[in-house]
Length: 386
Image 1 (cartoon, rainbow, N blue to C red):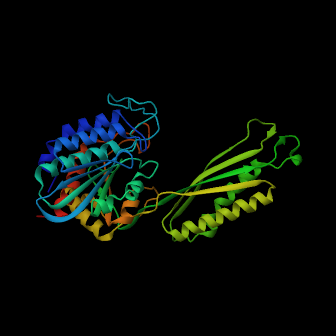
Image 2 (cartoon, rainbow, N blue to C red; image 1 turned 180 degrees about the horizontal axis):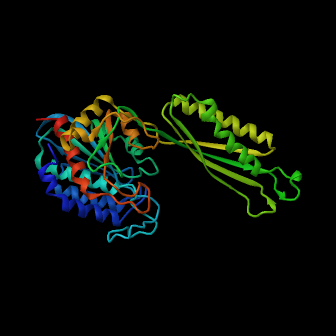
Image 3 (cartoon, one colour; image 1 turned 30 degrees about the horizontal axis):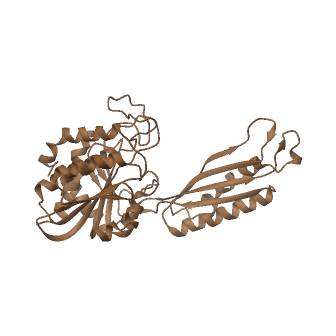
């Protein structure tokens, strides 16, 4: 079965929705205009219930099928990124330093396309819960929606999500059972020394040298303390200190990211980082404070739901266009919070050649909206048949 005919017929309308959203990006939980646009479309479609204001601007819409059954959740993220756009398109962002550079405008459009079809046809049993989520790029909106009780409140049994990928062939899908995306943490290290004249370093407690030593030592955690058979990344991404060539500063600051899959690896990295910061501070006669922030947990797919979702994807795009055991990636995704609560699957869908995600020249490919919408719709019909 290819793209559903009635969804394909809505392709131009879906393009209009997506480009409107692209022109009006919003950040994190502040997705008020986006949520209002989504709510208006859902009311036009005739959903049975519409619940707004979840996690500030999140929505859950309920569509009832024609028979008794469970509830399946479909999720789309709505927020943009705090960055300028350089595409020069006639529908480019109209908001300075805000841009849909990750395709969440497209994800929202795909779920709206599925919503319209499902509300019209209702060829399924039970219910579908359409989850439109703010704050994926920062703030963990999925986690907040879970904390506010959407899984129990709407009796969601299973949950699915899609993410676009540039440079993968249009309509190709890939996923994997078990962990697919890493847990993401960040660390901040503040160093306080004693500054002075660059000509008299013996009179100072140099935070510059301490910051360099700490950065180098942190990079040995993966190479010398970690089992190479388990995936993990530690990256120092910022060092800020000093103001001119002949002054040793008082302070320095380091920042970076940590990506892991297993909680015990995460705990080891934290322990080693604490020891390194304390030891290097003593060695260089400075004060150093580590602030470690645990972020999104690993995104872990249910093996049975992956097999099911891949079967649906093959119906839409063909057997050769779907890979269901591609392994883990070190990126992160807050859909992980929903998968901690309910079994489900997270899949990637190719959108063809183009700029990378989070690039100022990125643009979502509208050609894949009917494909993603068809996938969502068939997941519901196949999981909960009449």
